[in-house]
Length: 568
Image: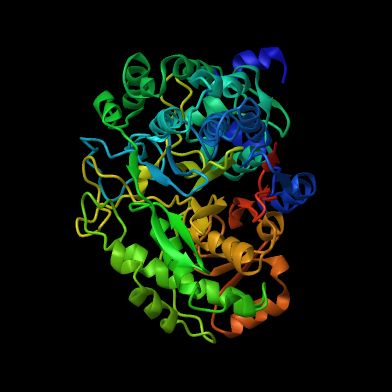
């Protein structure tokens, strides 16, 4: 892009027709296959180390985290640096205007979770019919990601002897926002995928296109407004996002766009420090976050699978996929019935994870016949970050703007794209997730860890909203039951039960490389099957790091993404 175009591209909003013209040549399905074949060949690598490791869906972000570890930083400091960088280099999935979740543990298994969920505005809009999924009406919850970083950083200094200065964690994010970075295939794909809608999101056009033209892969992409915001945070600390001049500018920008959020809503936003939920699995323990996240759904799925001898089932067979899908169904029925903000409703966590409930789930599964599936699928996107330092301290983290491109609203001149997580609320007064002032919405994000003998052995998480527990079931069984290395486990074919962006049927989506025999057998058992391309972005973008019994570390990020794991 030439300098004249660089100077102009933020200054005008082109017509929807102009935007569509720039993207009409792209066929999403064909482009997906070609893109991810190239990425897989380039990115497919298993990282190894005995000194520390990071993983994320973007190479520059992983590099930023590794630099922090190389400078003597710990896993929390590295995770914050990675997340700040992803807010620049992966803006379609990740940003300052979103929520974040951390599971934090030292090498001995002492840990906690940070659940960073922004609460609903104190005075929501008077919605008619339904909450919009895009636009200012969907920007109705505060964003807790930066407070999550802030609380984790203070814990790091207090309990882990963290010595990296706060501003050092923003060095690369500010650099890439100011000087630019090569646009990723993922950002290009999701821009083209949303080409028919982006023309109706003037802020996205203004900030994320070049005068309405979607940038090509590899073009230098700059975000000067965001660079200034990151600089303010680096110089003034995380609470500057919620209190003071920057917070006032954020609130003013949101309100001018039509959001109900105010400066007072931002000031009240805090991440929650909570103990993790746990479920036994294969002699160890899987841990996740408490409601209103769906971490309990992942734990129910895995707790149900623990009742079966999964390792005796051929991996990748029809029997394998059928069992996992049926376990997902049992957990999702509970999730949809009970999981909401426990400040407002009673969520029977202990009962849902009890031996009796998991035994009942296992007994309900017919190994030869698919159970009916009437539930709606919820889309969404996010990023997984994993970090282990030389002392064995670990962070498993997810951060999100909910849908790709969030609400489509940028908060004034701050460069901050706001999430649309509030669209997960219902307006039905009888619904457990009914919108109420100050309530936290149901959240799909659920990073996890696996412990054996009380010590962390696996860090994992994935992009994919409703697909997250499904993707994790496949990844975890392959890592734990079949003992595959992280790269192999992440590369193997995966499934997705429910609607997708391009297929409105509540069918079982399965990647084509699962094989025609598997497709035929699953159909014979009553599954409505829809093939999706091999290595499809619809199958999630998980990452995983494993600590081996000898203390060495191996890790990978999904070849379906633009990321990778890096060891010291």
